[in-house]
Length: 300
Image 1 (tube, rainbow, N blue to C red):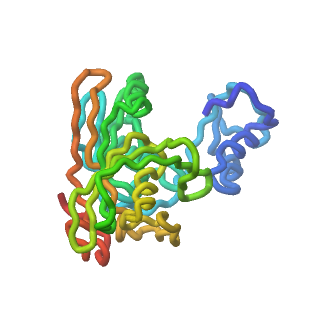
Image 2: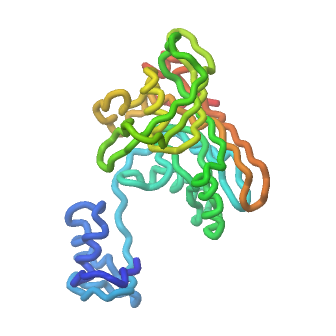
Image 3: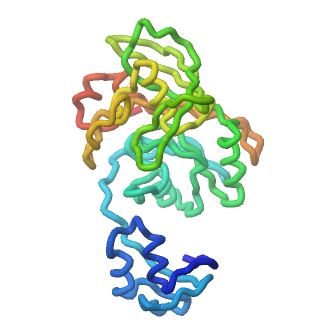
């Protein structure tokens, strides 16, 4: 870590305590006490070492214990520029909070031997489906710009209650806000910033299968919009109401939302790419297995 060139910290320890807030109380102090923070010469940095702008320090932070997600990440495409993966439910896309090693990015870096791999966008941890990763750091911005400029054609699939009175297809537009520290997003009055095309893809036994085509990418947009239509997605712990947190290791009743299709023109090679997930939503193929099963991900 390179210490910032501007700052009012008296010691290196003070800066690390402030910066590594997610490490937990006393963690940084323990690292210094054990000599685990070292300088450019390889010697341990004492906790009272004066703060020097631009100084480099090295350390390894112990990863918190994580419950393994027992489902594989499937690589559906790989070349020298990109990797497209089919992410399972319950696996975060990138390290965040308590999910570090158990993320699609960490797994793929290890399994493919590509330490420079980076996610061009993200899927919610509870959502399964296609994610685009970039291989070369110098090309990362070109692929991320595709998503920023809405030049990626995305299609999702969801299973939710069937309402015969719900007229489809329709385009849902609303203003969605997501406040830091609040689990669920909400719709508010104002200029719409979220747009989703909702189409019927079949129904049976009180369940509906929906094709969702988002024109924007607000947090939890698809989940919020289907809830607003009166058909919240099966397995959603946040909508329409926030329920008790799912215990670690409980992989039953996954959110029935899948990033089914991803299409774009490659900004580096010019190739027209179209990728389709091979995963299936279990509540649609076998509702009883989804509702009562042990959580094993279905084949296919």
